[in-house]
Length: 516
Image 1 (cartoon, rainbow, N blue to C red):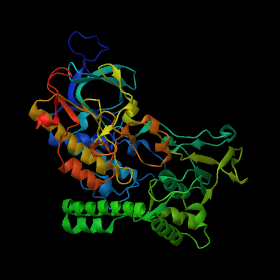
Image 2 (cartoon, rainbow, N blue to C red; image 1 turned 135 degrees about the horizontal axis):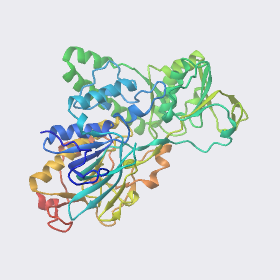
Image 3 (spheres, rainbow, N blue to C red; image 1 turned 120 degrees about the vertical axis):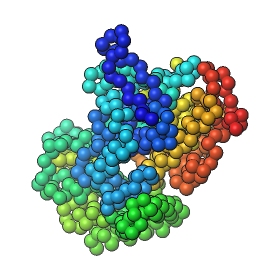
Image 4 (cartoon, rainbow, N blue to C red; image 1 turned 90 degrees about the horizontal axis):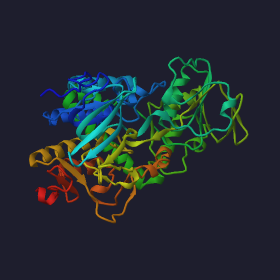
C-alpha cells in the first residue's frame, strides 16, 4: 500500500496561507537512525499503516549528518549499531560518519521512505484528545515560521537524547580574553583552517579521543586537556571474523554470525568490568601501557577515579590515539582550567597551555522528545512526573512511544527491539478493535532515576527526565538478552496496560486481562 504523504497545497476554500490537517496512523519525530528504523518496521510489519516522518533539519541522518568535526566516526561497531534487518557490508566495523550516512540513505531508498519525510519542519507541541483518541500535532516550518497541523493516532519519538541546536559548554572564566577560535565540535566551522596550528581539545570523552588523532594529521600539535581521565581501549577498525564470514557465507548469514558474536562480546566485556572492576582496571591499564612509550605516565592520564563502565568506555580504532601520542604529535594533560588567557589556558597547577585554537569537547545537553510540549486532555505532561514503561512508553500518556537505546552497548540494538514490540502492540490493538492504550503504574510504586549512568551529560539532566521503576516492565533494562526475552518473546500486554475502544478515556476501557 502506498503510504500517505502530507500535502503542502491548499484545498477547497482554505486561505492560501493555511494547510489542511493531514491524518496519519503514526507520526515519527526525527529522521535519524531511530526514526528511519521505526519507519522501516512500520512499512514492513504493518503495511496498511500510514505514517509521516517530521525532520527539523534539511537532511536525514540525525547525528551522522549534524556532526562535521574531523575524524567523526562511530564508537560502536556497525555490526551491532547497524540495523538487524540490513547487513553492514563495509569492511570498516568502526566506521566513519560518511559511511554510516550512506548506509542510512540506502535504508531510506530501499524501503521507499523518501516521500514520507518532511524536512525543515519541527514538532512544536502535541495534544492528546480522549474524545477523538487522537493527537493534534503542531508543526513549525523552520524556514518560514509557518504553522501546520497533523492529526495522528500515535506519536513515535525518534528524536534522540540531546539538543541538536546547542552543545554543552561550561562557563569558563576569561573566555573572552582568548583571541582565537573557541569551537564546540557540535558546530564545527566548515572553513576552519587548522593546519600548522596549536590546538587544545578540552575533554576526555569519545569526541575528544576521536579529534586528537584526526587534528594531529595537519596541526602543529594537539593537546587533550582533561579534568578527569577516561577508560580508553583500542579495538580493530576492521572485524576480521565479520569480513571472512561475509566472504564465505554471504552478506546475510555472515552478518547474522558476526552480529551475534559482537553482541555477546559487548555483554561479556560489560559484565566482566562490573563484576571484577579491579581486574578490568588492571587489564585496561596494561593495554594502555603497551600502546604508549615506556616513560609515559599512564596512571596520571589513563587511571579514572571510577570503575570501568560506571561511565561509557571510549574505543579507539587500531589504537590511533595512542599512536599519535607516541609519535609526539599530541599530548595529554590532566589538570583543571583556572582561566582563559590571551595566549591560551592557565591551569590550576600554574602551567599555561599556549594555543591558537581551543576546542570544547565538553559534552551534550540532554533533552528527550526534542523539546516537544505534550499535554493529555489539556493537562501538560511533565516528564519527571512520569515513569517509563518497557523502555518505550510513559505511564499516563496514551499512544505515545519513544526510542531510548543502550548506554553500555550499541544504541540501535535496543531501538530495534522497541520497534518490533511497537508494531506488535499496534497489531494487537487492531485485532481487538482498540483505539488507545495507556500504561498505568500501581499507586505508590517506588521509582528511581531513568538512567543509572555516571556520565556528566546524564547527571546534569536527571531531574528533567522521566523515572524508571524498580522491577518488572518499569525498569530500563540495559541488557540485550533480557530485552530480547521481554520485548521479542514475552507477552505483548500485561496488567499495566489500559486499552480503550470508545471515543472517551473511560468508555470501554479494559485491562490486559480482559484483552486476552
